[in-house]
Figure 1 (cartoon, rainbow, N blue to C red):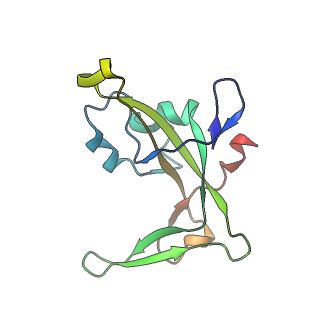
Figure 2: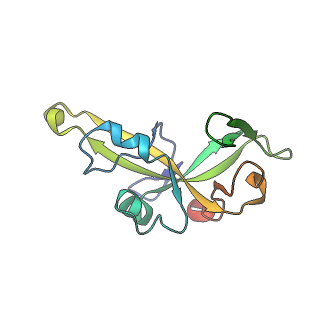
Figure 3: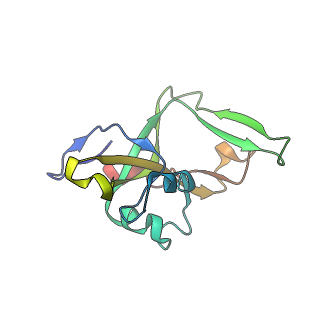
Length: 137
């Protein structure tokens, strides 16, 4: 869910992993699936989307990992009282420079994270940010 150019809300399908417009290829998105609240406004990969392209990602749960490499455990985190909730996200447009004449564009997203959210305290210290969920309200 994001704001359209005319200011109305719209739902859009997106690919997971933020690929900034300046990225050379889609592989860059694998490195941009989470941004920390304390650095999202400063890092070049997230800065533009943070300023102008925020969204809500509707989910019924999300997954987090804990433990050391080789002994990692996957945790499914949901809200008992809410079957559907939203996570703060960013979206971006990316276009393949080699195929730009064919109109190959990509719409992608990733989650913004904040430290110390109680819902994810057990798996690790970060959690998809909930303080940005009012952006479209």
